Image 1: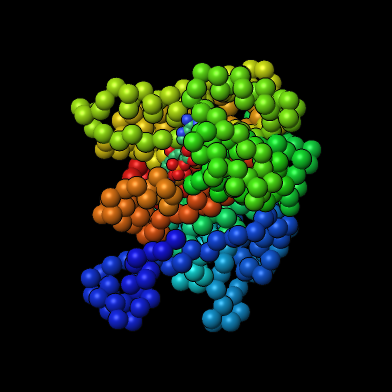
Image 2: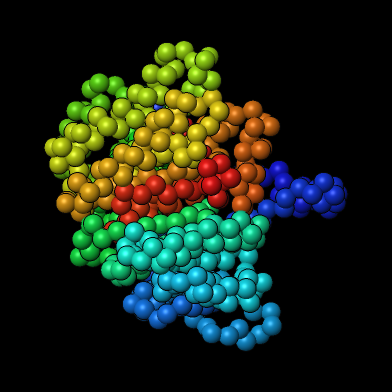
Length: 451
Ligand code: NAI
């Protein structure tokens, strides 16, 4: 992925011009190319602060230590930097206790390394009886979203986790993910931990999807392909589906990761039945379903032809509903399963020329929310991700100026890679993410649209 601004700033001849014009100078984002490791934070210096020592603090400390982080109270050398800062703000109940946020971060912000991670834990406002305590907890979201805008230029991410008065143990997987490289394009987000789904018997830290069968739709290219590759890295057995016209490309990609290709138009009337029969006959069911296939047919509503409206609704929403009716209804999707839908920031915020697309992508936010409780009875988690500007053939098709502006409208001043979306999907598919269901998480570098 070549970034025009990074190239301008890297070349001494053009760097002065870029500076004179005040063009942003995005830092290269750290990306993990391998699979999960048991100690993803080995060699990283971390600081943990708590407003009031709580069960959450204990879990956070243990999680950081197990992940290999070097917990330090004081930086010894003047040039030493912090890679990870975790704040347990779950004890913040009064306006005066906001000082904890200031006192913890004000002296440490200049010590944060490029690509550092800040994770804040707060109590879910909905679990608090006192209106003032609930307001204070909700305010931490404003703090964290603002801070991520301030530090984004250094590739630093700031995210918030809301946890109820119970469920502290569910923080471990979230800490492992949000404090590691995998969240490089996720910042300014608030994740809600829920206690709907039971704790899995095994919580592996490596090859976390070994023994699982995963279906990814639209996986011949783009985010779908990156997701299939990433899930395969974690040991999953992949079924990669794409339209018959993409068969050659699909088969080639499948060979590379030992996946089974399936040429099928997901929006066709026979797709749900054919897919269910295929999964049952070949694999006895499926554990992970990633509804990635999606299309855009952009026009203003006044200029949109009926068939463009219908195509988008059919592929982006109706197909997902129809496939799930069979896979979930006939229990092709096994217990402890995971479903991830691809929404979009267009679905969160709306977008000019995308009434059809935004309607379907917003519907998916409502869909995962509405399905979560029912599916939790079988310990299945269902979530969506809302990517921002991710470089794929879909975004390559945009006009140059629109594309260049789209890339910059976020706190990190650059676009994301398909791998960044794949990382979030993989996390949501993992056993460790059992506390997250019914949520839509943005992978957008804190895109200004809808932020
Ligand atoms: P892409 O256009 O590069 O790839 C989509 C894949 O889906 C293609 O291989 C295509 O053949 C397949 N597909 C389309 N219709 C299908 C059908 N009826 N049956 C089976 N396969 C079908 O798209 P990209 O960028 O990788 O996007 C993937 C998902 O992420 C989509 O749902 C998209 O709406 C969503 N998204 C992408 C963003 C981006 O910046 N790239 C931003 C927000 C959301």
